[in-house]
Image 1 (cartoon, rainbow, N blue to C red):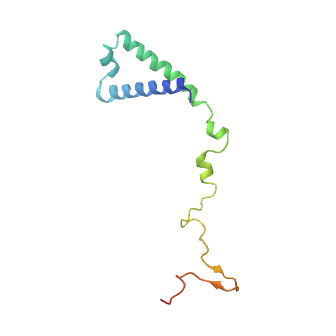
Image 2 (spheres, helix red, strand yellow):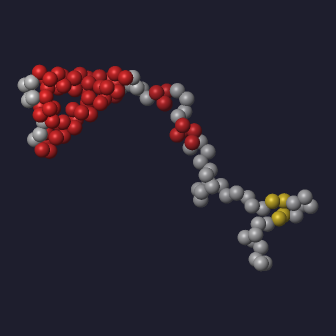
Image 3 (cartoon, rainbow, N blue to C red):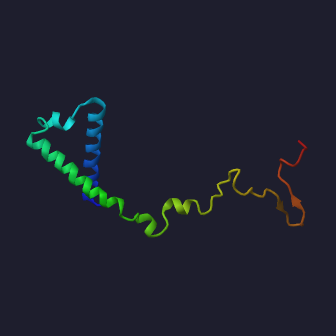
Amino acid sequence: MSTLSRIALALVIIGALNWGLIALFQFDLVATLFGGQDAFLSRVVYGLVGLSGLVCIGLLFKPNEDTETAPSRTDRRFSNPNYGTEFGEEPDFKKETNDGKKKTDRSDDNSF
């Protein structure tokens, strides 16, 4: 994500939080900080939030960079999901010795 997209996203989040404050508490934080809704700085902030919304519309239609190139880290992680859990394959604890007999693990041997 480019720097411009990150700045635009941050401004859109600020605008969304301001609208949330207006809806829930009838409190306009931008107007309070910059001298009312008609103040020049407030209008600049409102304009920047609006332009940022237009930039973020482009992010909706931008293809995901991870899926367009090589598989992402999470895709490779699930390619062989044998983590020794109950869903994976059980390890074989029975080993064959040199004389051809099978040697069992201690859980099969009942002698103490």
